[in-house]
Image (cartoon, rainbow, N blue to C red):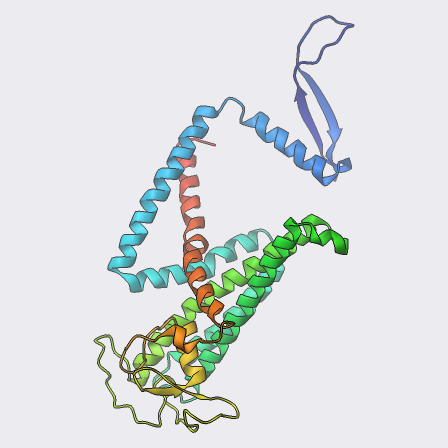
Length: 333
């Protein structure tokens, strides 16, 4: 259905009437305009709607700044005093908040990937919380979250590269419109960051629960079981390959504290589970020594980036919604 808008035009002179400046109403069919012209019309309507509201806008900005500062202080204190509840609430909000907005916007592609991620992660998390813990569960958990971590990392890098190529105009070489290339790059960047953050938090939760279930790790720092020389403290399975030998499927890694683990397990423990310490004696792990290959070090840096973005993903939309509620109650718009 074609839409018709009325736009008031000021300052138009008409010689036949000689009335000088006055307002005239112009009607036109929006469906016949290009996307750029539609955006300009909407922009003009927004300016006309909020004309003369400068004092109100200043008050809204002040409310936003004060709310952001107070919310940041509250979140910092909450995280310091009750980190476990803070992490659980943050994880729940990262899982639910984007779902609300994408459902409202009918982003079916994201909803499909979100559903697949939720089903697999729910099954893996269910396995990780069972008692007694099955011998194959730790490796299943680390394999899934490490795979998810690598996919999100690669997706984010590709999305960022597409955005940068678009800014430099490289998309024109392939005759791709800038808006299409930018939408594609931003979408990939969003997928990579979102599932990277969400996956790491689920992995940390599962790692904590499995470590306490296996029994080699406790909150007091003292192991509750004796670790045999041929047992991996992460998965509880025998170590079949010597440290100095080359394994067919997987190698064995020895930490500086002389405790030995499956290489896949200890890498999953440190990278995915964010545990920079020995699972058995809690001695700090030297990540630079563990990841001597320069191609692997960006994964550690990328994990730190995901931690910084957690606030923007989980709490920023909630704070903005709270600010809008305050503005609504005060009659500001």
